[in-house]
Image (cartoon, rainbow, N blue to C red; front, side, top):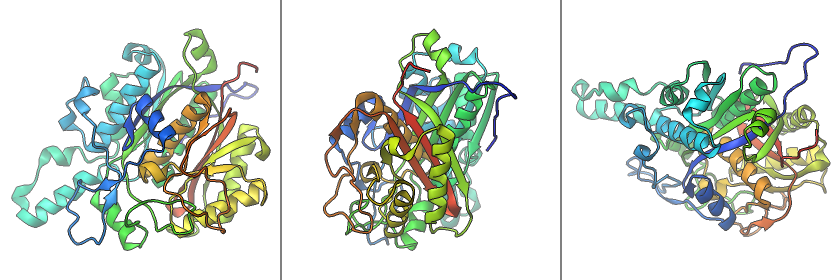
Amino acid sequence: MMQHAPAPGATRRRVVITGLGVITSIGTGVEAFASGLREGRSGVKAITAFDTAGFAHAQGCEVDDFEPEAWIQRLDPAELGRASQFSVAAARMAVADAGLTEEDVRARRCLVSVGTTDGESRDLDELVEAGLRDGPESYDPVRARRVSAGRLSAGIVRELALEDVEAVTIPTACAAGNYAVGSGYDALSSGDVDIAVCGGADAMCRKTFTGFYRLGTIAPELCRPFDRDREGILTGEGAGILVMESLDSALARGARIYAEVLGYGLACDALHPVAPDRDSIARTVRNAHRHAGVTADQIDFVSAHGTGTKANDVTECGALRQVFGDDAVPRTISIKSMIGHSMGAASAVAAAACAISVSRGFIPPTVNHRVTDPECAVDCVPNKALDMELDIVQNNALAFGGNNAVLIMRRYRSAA
């Protein structure tokens, strides 16, 4: 990830979130998504994205109300794979939600940064399946042209006709959304850009579902993070794109501010291909607190990675106890219980959820909960949202290979 640093002696600029674009299985757009979070809505349904014959169970969290033509104005949606459609449409939503026009964005120095796990693997799945079934004559050049993961960010640039822009696609698996938001924070706080359009996107695909299924980590029916009887993840899809800018820029144009980004922490421990490492997670959290200038006791709640697997939840909660103390872990929730695991989009969607939560004063619930696993021992805000005034929140993202990213946000305060 490109690192941006202020010039020697320069002061970092404060960075705020002024626009959100979200596409999820519980709602598309800020209001639908926010009401889904507050209600504890479930996006679980039978998977239709691919043929599930041969799998003993195949529940997931697909987006079934997405109409790309409603949002994508300049490009032909057929030129884009589903993940790129998500990223481009969510960017349009976020820009509109920020009260900006594409001309406003085009006139500024801009960073577009999108995280992903699978890119356009759904198209690759279908190309391979057609080739195996029908031979070389089945080759679809239109579908083949759109499989590049770089199109998730390049599509946003083309859709908004941006000119003075850096566009990157970050492939750090299931932490990629937080990585992308972190890159936007760096570029803005250092003064390298004026606006950042950042987040993550992924589409449901056979490759990822099958991989997790073969690992024995797909839940038969529901995702139950932190529950004694949890059985694994449910794969999902969608996008979360944030418009971020400097505080001065937001104030100058009278923008609505969802939250301020205080900082983040990263790690790539590379200790194991898939198993999380408790010490590495704890180190990432401490790095995030230090970078953000906060202490552990200031965190009001943690939006956990919270996949609902046996290994992840115990390891992540153990890392939190290392940082916060055995009896002082803040409320720790997982929105994956509602929207499944949307891979590279997951932490970006969770960042949007955190921004909504601090601006509206509630903690989303962890749904499907029955009995907390004693090895987790956290208050996961079971099944019902909790209304309370919030200040500082933490968003965890943990990925295969030890790619961890933790983001710290707070409710906007006018004081320096």
